[in-house]
Length: 112
Image 1: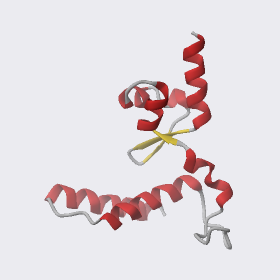
Image 2: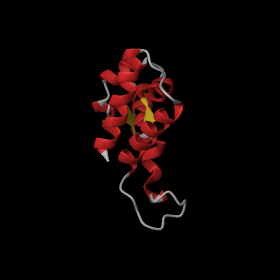
Image 3: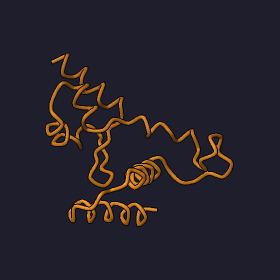
Image 4: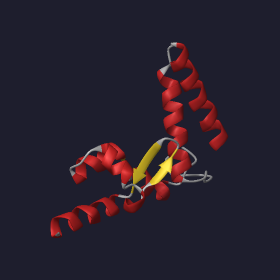
């Protein structure tokens, strides 16, 4: 599945570089493939009909760098700089963070 995500991302990049329009469904496919790579593998007979187990959806609640920055009260650049210390995972060009790690960081800042 990662090769499919890479192919879609490459198509978007090439269209952007050449000034061609990038259809919204292409962005949607890229987003869905990224989410599927983060969430997990297909599970037959899932409740929501997508083929993916909703129980693995906790990862879908992770925060991206902009959301983490808003919670912490800093810039996205700073969040990306300390991403590994926050337990972040890089998915393509995107960083995602577990909400509990962000809350621990905020509480640690408040206690200092």
